Length: 356
Image 1 (spheres, rainbow, N blue to C red):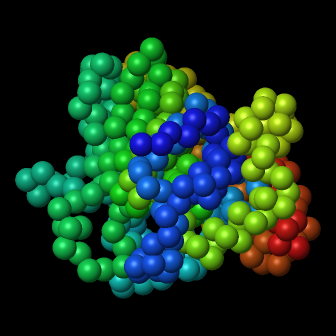
Image 2 (cartoon, helix red, strand yellow):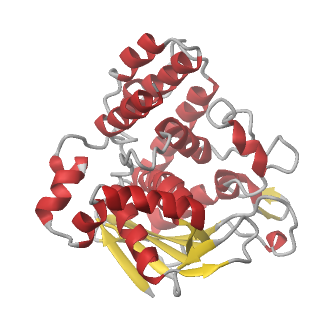
């Protein structure tokens, strides 16, 4: 197995491109076209997983979609209606144009049953680790036996997650059966899974630890890979990251330069039992936020005040997107400046500028 040790996803993408360029094997039998695949599984180790935003203009990732999809997952959703405003092409992965069969959040919180009763795995794992921080049975399942014979468009690529608390930090290992490094591993996965890790750490009242992404089929589609690799080579980005020189990374990584930083998802402090108060309150506020209409006041929580994350980060991002979709460019540019998460603000602003 090959291992890529990085600080964050912004650093991981060029490292992954270089690995596939050096070792990738061309496979022509993929259902979606020719791919380059690493000859062995690859593990990506993130030492700072909350630095989840990628800024490479060459990749041009949509930060609005990544941010909102992460919250959609934490709410345990599988409907397309919520996310349709951010990515209309999600319907291409649905069998009925209404839901996603393999939606991760749905699998976390509503898909699996015991005695016909739906199980919220996040609640179960929170209670498990709260009672016994050294427990090694905290396994979050996403792959079900139903998926083995399924012929539909969508089955989970990430199959399970392992949580463990060590030295007061929540470490997380994600197992993935089929990982497109451009759209998955160093795109959506790095955002959504790190949001899951931070959410669980917040409920447990511990710090965020290391995030390991274990990719069994570590690959990229040839046409997309060749185009992106060429752009990175032309700008000498691969040389900077492969050489792993500290001053090179600082030059090209906004997090290391100190120009941006993450904004915590959970900011209110509670007396024990921490997981019961913070988890229930934050989940409630998440539901309220997802039902909010753009430009409307966010209804205050009846549980002792609303977390600052919503007003400082989530609402400005949501409203900026609504202005953008309404072709109100000036208002969109002004609104995103209100976002106090400097990493998301930078990524959103630069994405809008590229679109213009």
